[in-house]
Image 1 (cartoon, rainbow, N blue to C red):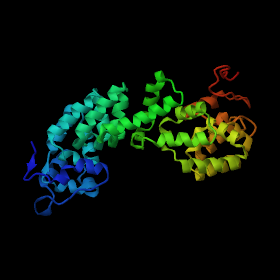
Image 2: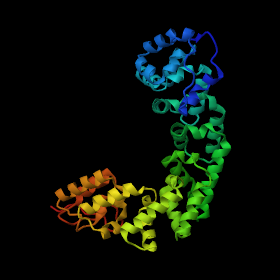
Image 3: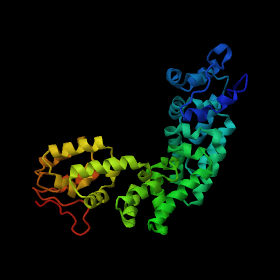
Image 4: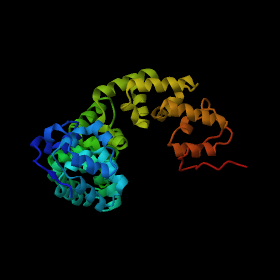
Length: 378
């Protein structure tokens, strides 16, 4: 068992795991005589870890006088990780070897409470090792897990939050409670159905885990701004429901600039602009340079402005995707300049299905519950 322990880590380096998560580099010369810890280097080398990569990115780890390389590898192996996974984890987050074995085991038990499947947990650790090995905030992590479980959120959602937005689990639970309260109050205050609130909240947190790091008042500020622009309560609920996690990312300055630009380009009234935004809420958060490029691309292909007004969701597609899809449709005998732009919309899979259903110049929307598209006639 490798336990290189000639001296205890200083308080600053004991927090290395958490500090690195925030981009702070701890001291890097604690080894004897300022040299690398040979036992640590050899142990990592025996695990097929790329030492050169660690030296280049996080060389300070190799200078620490206390490391638990074999213990960390053994715990990962007990979880079900094979040699290749262990090597990748330690290459990506070598600070893991500075965690005491009892701390890592406590993390394992904690994470297993929301991700009991070992294979799934290993997959999370491989993808987000820094999140798993942030052992210095164990108490806050546990309190936040209990809080989100009390909201009856899906375990998969909680584990995703812990992995992709670890900062939100490292802070006091009271801060997350304030954000969630603000989100749910805004949703219910706009007439949202309390029975659907849990599903809405799960989708919101899954779509944008970092929403928890936003000021609690951000969503209400945005609601007030849009209400002042003429959106009704029902329309605001539609926007909040569609944008979910992105709604709190909006800024009043950014929305004001985007709305002013869009109205100028589309040459429409305020009321018409609101209708367009309700069809394409993404207009609220795209910066004007991106919108300008997309308008220019669409108009440059011969598409008329009234077509964009009718189907503004085409503005959600990048210029590369738009040009590719227009070319594909043209090869199928469909001209977007005279047809509906709905043929351009949808995911990659949706679009391919649409292409297969095109016959001559007749295109029906992919999602039409009244008249589903017919298969091409022979």
